[in-house]
Length: 169
Image (cartoon, rainbow, N blue to C red):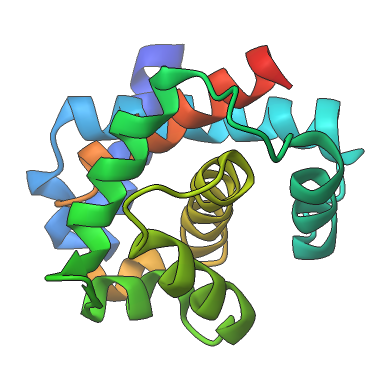
């Protein structure tokens, strides 16, 4: 088989097992691929290829400064996730689905997302934790329970956040 035939066969195999994938557009698939590649690079370069929550939290504590000299490119990403995971400053079902049984991360995100003027550590740490949870849900299968059709902007914004984090810290 050619590479193209192999890719088509994989696509068919996935659609046969998950018919909802037939409606998943190419942009979403590309965003997922880019997110996975960027997260993998972050994990390798910044976390020692561990992928553990403790290492993500350690990175936040040890590498994200807690001063007011924050780069402005993080704020629009933070505001996107505020709109996604809050309804009138109240965490919604999407935040619960993002965090699952990771109650520590849920509590931390709930505390930080409601803030209008978070510290750099809270703001950038929240973006990193959201990216971590998206990665966990995608790789460990939880994303299949809710589907992938409304995830395009999540993956695009999380990927942007990860690129900025790697460039800045």
